[in-house]
Length: 190
Image (cartoon, rainbow, N blue to C red; front, top):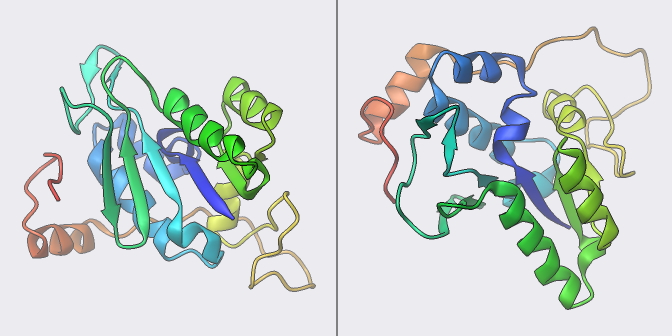
């Protein structure tokens, strides 16, 4: 199954990451989301394509590739796509789903988003949908995905108490940032 994630939509459904975005730490939130997906118990997330907007948000430019056309990167097994200027992640996701539908493989695509219009469109061409809330709970190991495939860790028994998805500690992020030579909130060039 090919997984396509509406990146900022999912970030805003993960409590601590949403708080970091509101505090202006967008790059940090993107990096943590990519880390969470690459380490998820659900192996289909390990090779997901995560799509981020590269347009302006609330009048401020998003940290990331400015003035570029569609930009694709690889982060280990994850694909990372930044929408081109004048476009948004929804349009890019629609194009990705349409490409699969054109070859009769739309049912093999799982789109992770809570954007109703995008979900409705993707469903209309045959893709499967998982809401960002469901995905966030799944990343925290708390719920079976709705599209019917249980996680490896999904066992019968009493439900675990609610817990928030944990982000790495600031010192851990700083250590990895130093290791990779990252400075501040500048975009990462690969």
